[in-house]
Length: 241
Image (cartoon, rainbow, N blue to C red; front, side):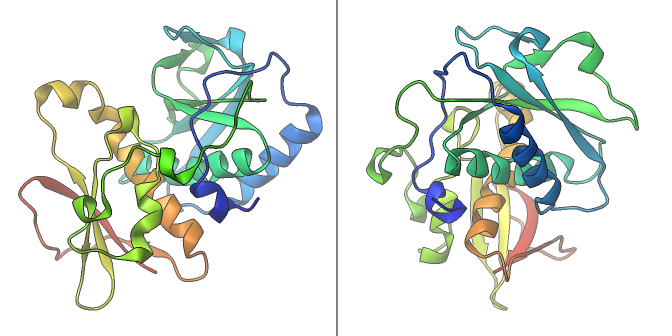
């Protein structure tokens, strides 16, 4: 299964076999990560693949391994991490390996701060799934396309299937007269800002990754100085496909 097909079948896996990925699988994973497209090439980022005894979690389930994600703090740094590692999420699931974005874990102390002023942002559970890896398209619980865009556009369908923190789906897309698009992030109230708010910028990157995978040859992300302001949303950037 290729990455495009995986968009419409993936699901967050929370039940794993005890067996960790073998060295060949880890090598192929690292090669994919190293070749993944970035949203902003001026941001330094890194990752570590660790075993379950190297993280802290309040969740009642564990995977045998985790990817810990780090970045320096620059414009769009959270979006950049979401963009890169949603490609990784799709690669893993297209390869028969389960994955799940996890905000509710933290690494052991030695992983909290990396060199080059990179800080820990979020983790991803990985491993062999215990049970069904894929789901049917009709099983996705997602907002209608007309609720996340200013007008119906089949070219944006892949965004509907992007995972997000507690399925918040915080994105909104508008069309520009020159054929490009603006992507916005929902403004949150105080309570939501303290919970899902810290991950919603990562969610924007995840959504953009789905658009990129569907349009690898033409996708381009950029920041506009002059853009339409929307009352209930924060401008995140623009793209063409």
